Length: 594
Image (cartoon, rainbow, N blue to C red):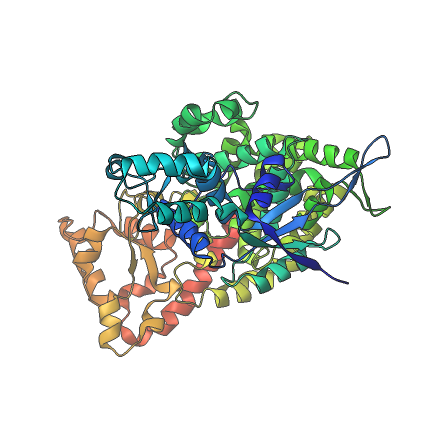
């Protein structure tokens, strides 16, 4: 089967299709990322007759309407958006959306004497040898433009000026290649074709295709929904962007979505800053009980999975359902309540949240259980346990779609407590806590999910930092405190240990820097002698701890074996093995208490 066709079209034909909607530019409301100089270079290439590459479009399938007639599908532009947007700006003079989401015009000037393009600037506007805006020239009368130019520049060669301006005006008559992909192709095939054709090796995600589909469907309000998704994600990172929307997108500011996300204008919490991939995945999975975004693209196209036809009513229902999912996601109560649950499990910093897929599915669990009417107390416990279970088992690492699909269908079939119990019995048995987890803690990677869960357990327990009297581990994490070594790094290096040996998770603790400085590079036996001495003499030169009991309690909450107080280099390996078991037990007790 021929998977695509390749044809050459006049630029003016492509631009006419864009204006009529025959070609939908799905990212048109997203920032135009080219700077003006790239637009200038594009126009120069066209003027010189150089090729500017192919654009790739994927035709939507024909959709059967209620009256039985067929609505011919649009072409969705999936590669070449920047070039087409640049052409609409420079040739037609249309506005583009800048990196700050402001509507601006990019004006390219042309010097017909030197046959040179440049980005318009104040100096060019004052210089009579320049035509300051080529869009006015291309869409004007050649004879009139030549006549007026020669009046301002009588020394110019009339024949040459007429020739160069005619050449400029004919830029829309140049050709551009269009690769049109068959509507029968599935997303996986389209992705493969895109990667093979695109010399830059850019990889489109399933979410990219879904969002392209959404943005191109003006009939079902997809263009506005696409903006809602984009704007929410941008506001979550940059609350000041709120005013940009008010000032530059009056239509969206009046939409139903804007008031529902306006709470972000004063929100600075960065614990969970979703991008459009996260938002669309959570909204889709929680509402459609499916995990594969390729299904979303099919449903938004109106695909009837039984008859294998495309129906407008199915597309409309899919959009209505997706809108509900997006609205639930951006809802202030839902979003803040979910973050409060995650924080109550000890994950108080984005530094501890390295598995975005685990966070996404935890939010799916929250939204789904809420829709199912599960009581709030149970939801809180289920969300915390499922999130920590996911992190500990790496459930959503790699490609998560099939796992998302399996899990959401399970949630729809039986009570959540049964699902959780089954997973715990299968993957969090006693052997996991006593053998597998300690072994997983045998690593030097500080970003290890197991170490993050350990730190979360300390936060939840209000544990104090190592050798601290009052400063909590949570405080040290929130204030970007430093991780230090129980067996000092320099001490271990001097005894011949390499980086993988001294940078062990089991050798890490959160410790106040001022305490760490006083510990220096002494072996534990020596620095604990100082601490015990200060306790006996009540001088507090190293730590604020004032009794042997406080010292013992501090070691216990940090899972540091009390035997460390008499340890030197020969004891290092046995120390690591013992501490890993203590850390594992703490994680187990923490998990079972969620």
